[in-house]
Amino acid sequence: MIATPLDSAKLDSKEQYEFYHKMVDFTIKELIVKMQQQKLCNDVEIVFFKQYCDLLLYSINAMRIKYKYDDEDHMKIDLTDSGFPNYLEFRYLFNDLSLREDYLSKLTPIDIIKDEFLDTLLRKKEPIKSNRLFQAASIVYYSSVQQQFIFNKFVQGKILKLDKNKDFEYVVSWSFYDVSHNRPFVCFMYFNYDGKDALNERAKIYEALKQSADREMNLDAMAYAIDRKLSNVFPKYIKRIDIGPLHNVFAKDENDITHAILESIANKEIPLESYAFAIKVDNVKSGGEFKEGSFFSKQTLQKWQAIDHNNYVFAPHRIIQLLHNKTAEIINKLTKPPIEMAEIKN
Image (cartoon, rainbow, N blue to C red; front, side, top):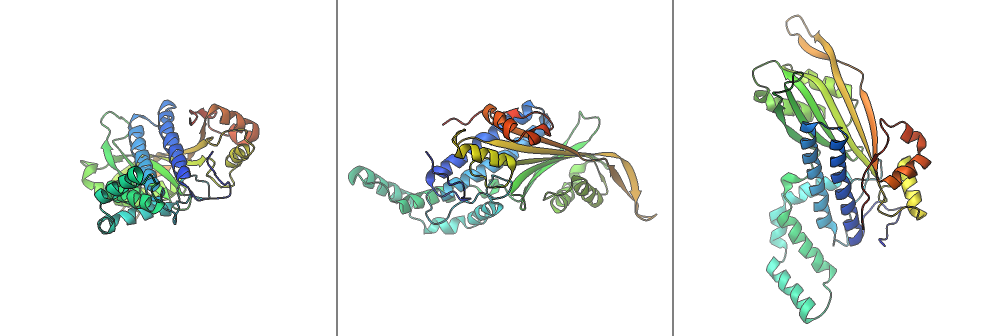
């Protein structure tokens, strides 16, 4: 049994790091499959969605390597509606890896570590000391983890030309890790372009997205801000996927679903591995255009329709039953009934 204090927001043992990483890895991979099966992402979107999730998992695995044998510093799981690592953990990774060569030069060479471990285990018949395990983990961390694959505050995807789509000429995706919510978001913007090729303006488009759409805000406000910055780009449809919270034993928020799961785990009604994944998908479409500006410098802008809000919960069958019993009001307001995911096996 893994000791998991319900009042702690830190992972403070090797077992907890392994357990948490296994849970996040399993649930996100399951989520990708279910998002596709439930057609919550189309064929183009699911490719990008998976890529952003892969970056997220890569980063969390890097945290596992970084902290697993560290007796002094511990990874923090966010206290708010999240269940994911605190945003600062991603910044620590990125900053750490900027100094990769400096750190590696100060660590004991790997061949010496290997010989020492073999001597300790085979000749002395003694366990490896934790400080030496930490040194070995640090070597693995700094020599194998690549900075460019760390999930950053803003991750830009490519512009894709939609040759077979009669409604939109292009789609661009991006992702961000919202600092206030400590959750990842994935966004898609379908647009038309007044010119020969939107790829010629990709630097300008990317900059506008980074400036106007790198945090959670009202979707129509975000759409308008993007629209204003790009005079030759006509956004027609914007979709935003809010990944989380991941309700699990490590979450410590006031969310009713989290509370129901924690209470049932504490009462030994459900296993420690129990979880539920909440996903919100918001969409906003253009309902027409209007002109704004002076007579000599008018800009065509979009009239945005009402935002379409959609809420989903993904969970194993046993947890779905639990939530129907304990959080019926929330479950009844979902866009569709809870979507079943597999249980995490020991």
